[in-house]
Length: 318
Ligand code: UDP
Image 1 (cartoon, rainbow, N blue to C red):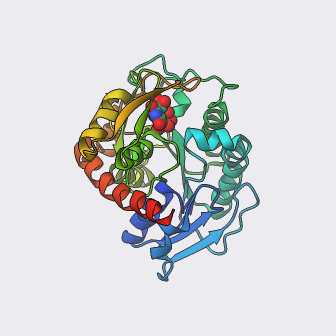
Image 2 (image 1 turned 135 degrees about the vertical axis):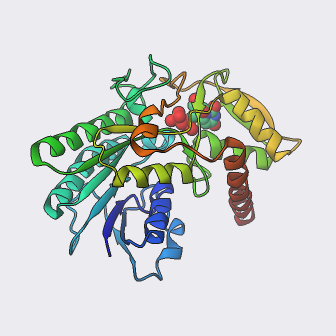
């Protein structure tokens, strides 16, 4: 049985990766310090013999008994309000945490896939973004702690590959959504769904003309799985190129939820909020034979089912 370590295992993406690798017949070692993760996301895996969980902060030395074949490094605060609240932890997990992960990969002779992000492109001057674009990042702006941590992650991953010969894979993740996103993580989709379900104002930042392109989590996980097993060691964009303005997105959510009290309210645009974002996925198609399969309509329908349950549960708990 192949053994895989997943950091950030209790998070949104980490928990879906745990499910996928269990399903593929791996022994999964999940690691998380629960800073932004939630054990609810993986509690169904605890009875399984092929799943282990380590409560650990990866900015400290990581000890894993036994062999490892693969590492998926997904630990990090990942929503803008989280990394605004926790800028130092965000920098530490991207820098010290990734260094420790690389040390484990080298010691165990394991292949490591690291989670980078479309944020390495900053507020991009090239649109859609291709992997050869170096980005437009403000290192001292509010997003700098995340963007620069992830740029460092790419740099140290590359250094371990070239200097120590560690087998590395790098994914640049674009906006991804689906069940298990935290209702209050501040990202646009949980915010809009919870506001629409409660019949509140949907908080559109600025005039809402900024764009994003949303990828359903199952498509992303498939891309990660293929990238890990591929021979390609450069950064690869994985995302859904179906671009939409945030204002139109708010209207779609209102139409789907159908609560007559839901409406749009405009709030100030956060500093350095990227004006556009859309992945160019030509490389992923070529090297992984991957492209997204779940349309926004379908992915939103599945997400709505989830948010209906969790927003209701929260309301009952009050
Ligand atoms: N946004 C918004 N209202 C919200 C939350 C986010 O209008 O309540 C906007 C935000 O300004 C950005 C986009 O939605 O332009 C996506 O924001 P998110 O926090 O999901 O992630 P980002 O893509 O900015 O990292």
